[in-house]
Length: 162
Image (cartoon, rainbow, N blue to C red; front, side):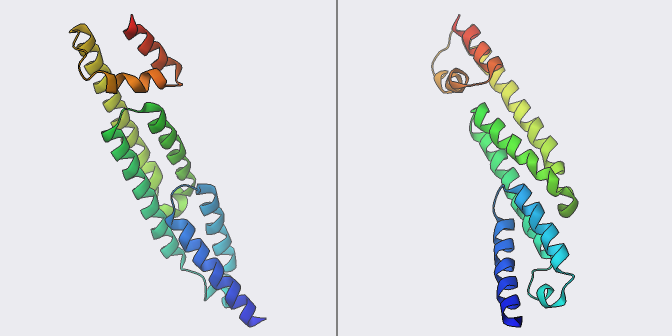
């Protein structure tokens, strides 16, 4: 029985560590935190489980890496639907804040501000290019608006078409 407990708890430990390193899956990570807290009450299991502080660090690093991916995506593209989808998914990480020292919450507002600033810059640039009838290079900025499923962006695109 003892060897089964060791085998199962080591397997769980590896799975939990692996999951904490992955992006997304916030509810599953939250469940793993709760499971580990409960199982750590049992000494034979606890000795084979990762320390909760180690899991917190892995999870914080994962959230920070996800925020960086979104930040890079905002900087490199104007595909607002894709950015908004990623951002909405990232906001789900806030359920882990009690285990990660508010890592997600501390990153949500700056990411939102960056995204809003970039969209405002792109909108202003497009307006200026349209007013000046300088259509060279404008295509790359208009495509995300033309393909957007967001009604406001679609209306902007239609307005720019004339």
